[in-house]
Image 1 (cartoon, rainbow, N blue to C red):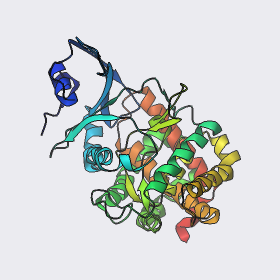
Image 2 (cartoon, rainbow, N blue to C red):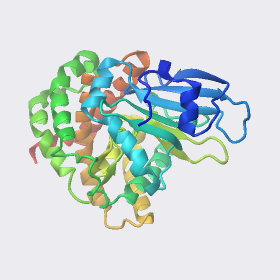
Image 3 (tube, helix red, strand yellow):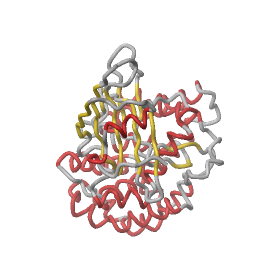
Length: 356
C-alpha cells in the first residue's frame, strides 16, 4: 500500500512522482487549497507542478484527502464516505457514460485515511448551491443523472460495498443522525423550518425506516447520494463535457428518484422547481427511455418523487444538525438546503405520506 497523506503538509514532489509512475519528481510544487465551505467532508487542494521535461505530464492536479475538521471527519467515517468514494472510482465509474474527472491514483487504509489524485478541472464552472440551479442547469444535471442511473438499473445488487438506502448501517445512522441533529437544526436554521414540519417532528422520526424501505424497492440503481449543485461542474469550452459529476462519497442502492428529489428540493431555485417540476420529471423519465429504460412511468416517478422529497428532510437534518458549517459559505448553502426542502415538502403536501 502506498503512503497516504493525512494532511496537505505530507505532500511532496517525490510522492507525486510515485503516484504518477514517473522516475523524476517535479522540480517544484505549489498547493492552493480549494473548496472552503463547499467540500466540507474532505480537504482539497490544487497542485501546480513544474517538470524538468514537460512532455505529457500534467501541469496541474487536484488532491482530495480526509477532512481536517474533526467534526466533519468523524461524520464521514461514521458513514464510510471515504471508502465509498474510493470504491466508486475504482470499481464503477468506467461503467457509465456520466462523466467525472480522470483519476490518476487513489488509496484508502483501515483507519479511513485516503487520497484521490485527479485531473484538474478548475476550468469547468462549479455550480452554486447558494444561488441555486437555473432551469437550463437543472436540465443538464438531470440528463447526466439519468445516464448514471440507467447504467446501473437493476444491476447493482451484487456490489457488496454499496449499502442499501434501507436496512443497512447507513440507514440506521441516517435515522439516528436525524434524531440527534433535530435540535441543532432548529438552533442554527430554525427560521427556515416550517411550522408544519416542527409539528410533525415525532411522527417524522418514527416513520424514517418506513420511508427508507419504500425507497428501496425495485427498480434499484446506484444513487449518487449527494447530487447537489456544489458537486456539479459545468463545461464552458467547446471541447468540454456538458457536466462532470464529483463527490461520490454517499452512493447507495435504491430508487434513483432520490437523487432527483435531492437536486430539486435542495439545490434548484424554488421558483424554478415550482414552475417546471413536471417538465423536469418528464425529462428524467424521457432520458431514461433514451438510455433503454422503458418500464419506469411518469406516474410512478411522480409518486416516488414526493416520497423522496420527504426523505430528503432526513438528509437535510443530518447535514444541518450534525456537521460544523465551518464558515459563512458553509452556513449559506446549508440554510438554502433547509429552506428549499421545507418549502418543497409543503408545496407537495408530502407530510400526508407519513400516514400512508
